[in-house]
Image 1 (tube, rainbow, N blue to C red):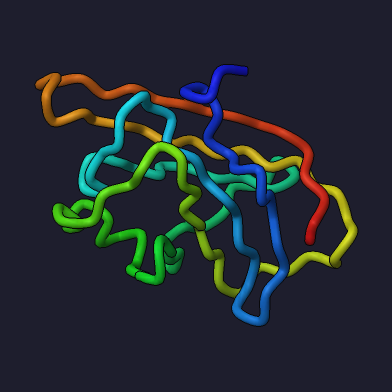
Image 2 (image 1 turned 180 degrees about the vertical axis):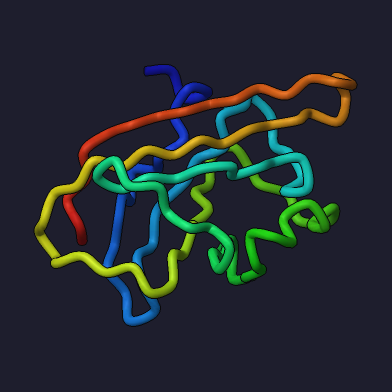
Length: 126
């Protein structure tokens, strides 16, 4: 899988006191502002995850997923992972789960383009 096709980061899935934390990668060849990125869906073991309370973490900043479109001054660098925090979701450390994530990119310099990037993989909870 090419780096621009991968959306689940190497750090995988972690259990935290706040909920599950999923590493994400930017599936594009250039850095983009977060406002041009959408996370339309995530599923764990085939069950859709409600993203209404999800939080994005990146470089010490946090904001609700619902406000991602407002993050015009926050850039996601292609070599960095961002994290999707799923409050209230739990999993036992060491357990394995099928995780599906879709990340859409809408590059500002290609008007009208929306590239959907789905990935499904099995992850062991850290």
